[in-house]
Image 1 (tube, helix red, strand yellow):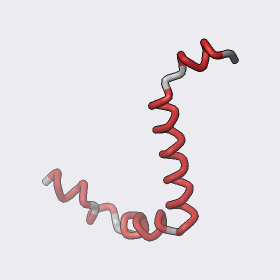
Image 2 (cartoon, one colour; image 1 turned 90 degrees about the vertical axis):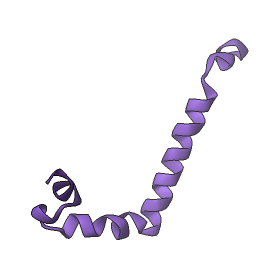
Image 3 (cartoon, one colour; image 1 turned 90 degrees about the horizontal axis):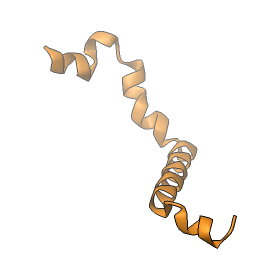
Image 4 (cartoon, helix red, strand yellow; image 1 turned 180 degrees about the vertical axis):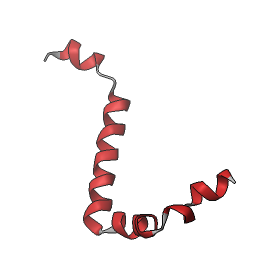
Length: 55
């Protein structure tokens, strides 16, 4: 890959993807993922917030 090819890369998108991966790994490693999702995982279907909104 030369200088011209490097100029054609959309660096904003590359940094956005890299940042998303880094944040996702950090959230997963700290256990925040399960802490935030556990109420939805253990909630019965009929008590889902999405069902409440559709009524």
